[in-house]
Amino acid sequence: MKDKIDNLLSEIETIEIKSKEHLEEFRLKWLAKKGLVTALFDDFKTLANEERKEVGRHLNDLKNKAQEKYNHLKEKFEEIADTSSPDIDLTKPAEPIAFGSRHPISIVRNQIVEIFSRIGFTIKENREIEDDWHNFSALNLPEDHPARDMQDTFFVKGQNENSNYVLRTHTSSVQIRVMENSKPPIRSIFPGRVYRKENISARAHCFFHQVEGLYVDENVSFADLKQTLLYFAQEMFGEKTKIRLRPSYFPFTEPSAEVDITCFICGGKGCAICKQSGWVEILGCGMVHPKVLENCKIDSKKYTGFAFGMGIERIAMLKYQINDIRLFYENDVRFLNQFKSA
Image 1 (cartoon, helix red, strand yellow):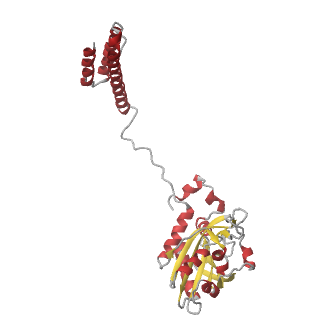
Image 2 (tube, helix red, strand yellow; image 1 turned 135 degrees about the vertical axis):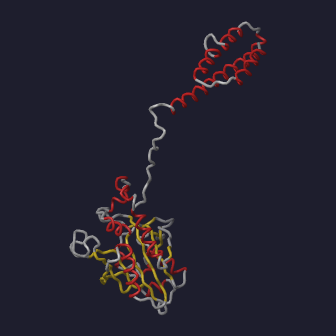
Image 3 (cartoon, helix red, strand yellow; image 1 turned 90 degrees about the horizontal axis):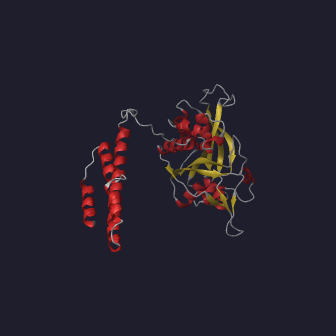
């Protein structure tokens, strides 16, 4: 009986089945109740006990191989039937792939970086958890300076009570680190995320993004600052854009100014965006304070410089006429999908 089973195993391997009809004939011959395998199991019952172990193993191999061949070919013929079904049109295009979109903050950040890169500004980034010196003191903000109250700060608990670390309130801390580790001329921009302890509303958030710029060299003037910012405004908002500088105060620059641009919505005629003034504020700037240069071991008698800083969300809200800063952080796909073509 063992030899008979071995011959049937060899026969199964050589059988070619080319259609569903032939497959059904195979099933009836081998696996049906009156098929070869069932008949062999009936004969198996008559064997002596000492023969059953070896013959039983071969018989199970035969049954399994026949069943596996049937299952494999059945699945194959079903797949062929599905693809040839008259309900499926293979000439139709596939379902379109849903592409993602860049975040509006990333879009505007990249635009700002690209504009300043054209005129020689390099990109520098650094840590978001900063010490008091780089975030405040080196920027002409000593511990008792009243201007520290202008920025509500998140303090980070250190390993001991004397640790004095904060979540940086501006990317000006990167300016300090660059000036400490570089010699003039320095011409860089510093994009990054900053944190301030503010109540979240349509106009304010506890974290947001800034791009600050710094240029330090011999004979850098306020006129250089103004021309640089005019170039940026026209590249970002259109070649007809004008700027104006209003006197302001920042501890780390002197003189300091706020920069407005002509409203690109109404062309300066007055609208809801510019509150009928014809102007919208975009950033703050000024000449680097001599004390800041000296804190970074740069000779303030030989070198001068200018610095500026802007909120990326502020630029994005103006550029895309977005009236609620919270939309940037809610991950609402309906909002984000609007920027696929941006």
